[in-house]
Amino acid sequence: MGHKQKLMLLGGVAVVAAVCQWGFGHPGGAQLINTVAGGVIALSMLVEMIKKLRTGDYGVDLLAVTAIVATLAVGEYWAAMVILLMLIGGDTLEDYANAKAHSELKTLLDNSPRTGHVKVDGQLVDRPVEALTVGQEVVVRPGELVPVDGTVLEGESTVNESSLTGESKPLDKEVGDQLLSGSVNGDATLTMRVERTAQDSQYQQLVELIKQADQTPADFVRLADRYALPFTLVSYLIAGIAWWVAQDPVRFAQVLVVASPCPLILAAPVAFVSGMSRASHAGIVVKTGAVIEKLATAKTAAFDKTGTLTKGNLAVSHVVPAAGQKASELLQLVASAEQTSGHVLAQSIVTKAKEAGLQLVEPTAMSEVTAKGIVATIAGREVKVGKLAFVTTDPAVQEVATTAVYVAVDGQYWGRIELADQLRPEASTTLQRLQAAGVAHLMMVTGDRQAIAERIASEVGITEVYGDLLPKDKVAHLNDLPQDHRPSIMVGDGVNDAPVLKVADVGIAMGAHGSTAASESADVVILTDNLQKVAEAVSIAEETLKIAKQAVWIGIAVCTGLMLICSTGWVPTIVGAMLQEVVDTVCILWGLKAKRAGMLLE
Image (cartoon, rainbow, N blue to C red; front, side, top):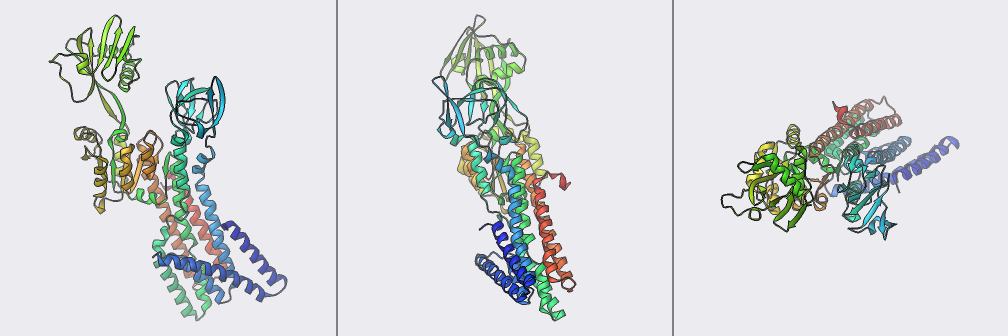
């Protein structure tokens, strides 16, 4: 039975008791009804509490049970009914608060792609997304959801990826561009080639992550339970002293009525769920609420290099012409020769030439020699581009240690074009923000060569660098961290990062272009191709934890104040029970602040 149904049933019992007392003038009957209802619920709570005590969980439920029993024992049966109604009402309010806080997460589930228009013998046939296979041609009409991941074959349009990445600006898509499932097509029809099945597509992976987050119990972090034992002892102490001074057991019940732990139980979970929702809206999926606190208190952040601190794709770093040749002419010839090649290095060179404003010439002939290079005819000249041995046998020309393509024109060596992985422009800022947030210990763990790793690390300000690592070596480095360097964060994107993401206290996967294995192993998945989201995740977590603690302390302070007031006997028991629920409402509303931007904390 849900909390809402329990509340309605208990409300019905209260109405029957009220009619019995004031309608028919039988207060004894009303007392019997309220006592039976209160006794049954108190007994069920006591059974649950004993189960928790056996596991060493000293929660604050003991206070609620004691308050109900005490009020019933001294004949304050209507105060007991108010406590019961408020307890169940608090749980119902918590359900509502959680539903509101999860609203951002649920929008993804509500908009899941269902079908795709497949080209079959020139005709369009609607197929369920689960039936789409790699290589099929699918048409996406204006305003429709992209059903699976793929590449544009025909058409140009703008596509909104905000539900996936948090980026509200529509992106222009043309032939060759990548389409992500779950994004919304603009005002033109696109034909796409299926690159991944529905099961492997970005959107379905995201839906699975959201389901994991959504299935986490509402009380995944009972922050208040850390204060449960001292708060319970203080409550009993105040209530006991009040009873002793007044020589009246009613005073004991009056104090415990306002010591009910509802606000403490509700405050932290509502805040954490709100923080998860806020993170999701920013393109950061946090799988469980427990991760929020680890993120907020992290001391160490370890980074993979390729695809994490760097863009993961090679770009032209140097154009090195031979003696007597011009760099611009060398780049122009190579880009002209390579512009029809599908090789990743070729595309990087063509991009560089276009950025430099060079006019490319269509080759009159072009052939690729597998694993060696290409031969093209440009304005009557034979241009060879590729590996050194393929281009020239001149012993005076030495091969360099970096990735490079070598060039010969009409049999004469013209120079080389070097390519290197490019540092993410936001990498340095991200690391500075992390250090400012208290993540003082930064390190790089990568399978790439030590020399390359150290060069990248020096550019971003990381001093602790470990290169030439196998996945098991990365795991060892994270496991060997001293206790004062924990909790630890590991940020990666590749399949080889999956094990180390799992062993870190918080594994963060760059999921926009990363591997599925990494996303599944991680505790947090960044949906945009932006490293700054790592620092944003930590910032959101810190603000969320701050709000959660504030809500708990507000609950403790107000409850303690009410206990002291009620110990004087000025406040009737039933009024105290009602007053206590004001605290519930304040704590829940305070916890919901975590869903909104950090401006509230400034």
